[in-house]
Amino acid sequence: MANVKRVDKVKSLPGERWKKVELPKETNHVEYYISNKARIRSVHKYNGSQHLLKPTIDPKKYVRCSIKIDGKNYALYTHQLVAKYWSKKKKPHFTKYIHVDLDRTNNLPSNVVWVSDEDWLKYIRARAKKFGFVPHRKGGKPKLTEKKVARIKRMLQTGRKKKKYIAEKFGVSHTQINRIESGENWGHVKPAVK
Image (cartoon, rainbow, N blue to C red; front, top):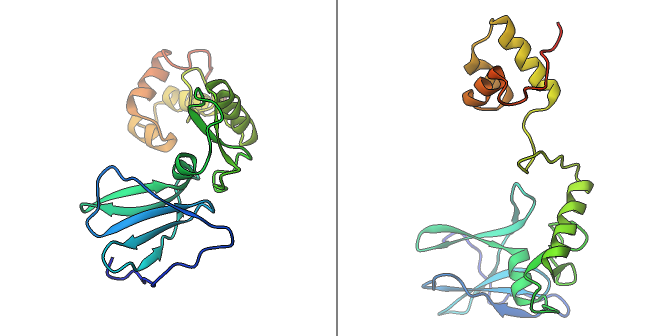
């Protein structure tokens, strides 16, 4: 934290209020606060100097701020903190929270709301539809398509490329290539014609 520019007080936005964040473990020198405007600040316990944390976006498009607790990295996810400290649960059985507009970078309390399990599943389906997520039988998004598998089968049939090369080229494991070859996986797909 030596390079962090601290100020006496972080200027609040109009109507902005702050709540102290409970961490899994107490820190020695700093406390963290989340605002109803989805900003996170640190406050030094002894001299009161403050710092507005700079958020980053993770690979899943969630906004987070990284901090250290006992020398280990720890992520403060903005949407989780907003849900916990600023979004009101309308009913006790609301156990999940969602981004109403499907935008994971919009973490205002009006957009991060608590919902029932049923509504959460509807949200997941709507998000999948909006962003072109294609499910397969085990859930998640498949690495391979039928077209790619047909090419893999053609490469296996010709015997010119090693399985290790094929696996690396398509971003799958050697075991997956063996299962494609044996017909255990993707057995319905025919080899591509040259």
